[in-house]
Length: 196
Image (cartoon, rainbow, N blue to C red):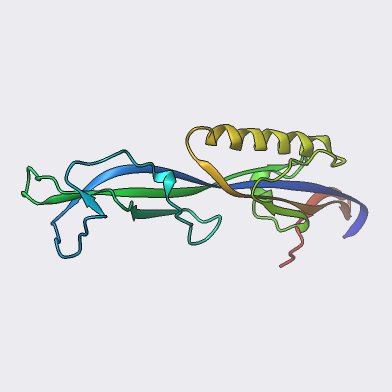
């Protein structure tokens, strides 16, 4: 087999991840434990409305989907339960999710194959709110960075808050090999930094 020509190129994988938090309240019932209740933590009348955002609840780990249940201080109420005649408590449901968007610059390798490729990390940034990429030489990376940042912000507005964001770029090397084997000519491609 003779290699007649090798053409090299690079596909850039751009990924933006937003770790977000959404909070809501729901009522949960349990049998009353009067010994554990204090006057400060419960009320007979329900009192003023509390917001789940009034309390600091931190995630266990960033960029990992998780659900947390937190009882808001001062939110317990003693109410007769129609099912079992016991008392109810209000739990704050804390949930978060990881929003991830990714883009590959155009190349001859199908994107479903590039998903398995390992490239070289050429850029990484993590902050509370990242700044979009605007001066990369390939304009579609700049455009996708702007689009992803806008989409992540729009998904969060009025629903949740962004705790942390990160974005990064991987360069995936691609080689297109023109070969001849006897009278036959052909082309094959290989990509990624990993060779098995």
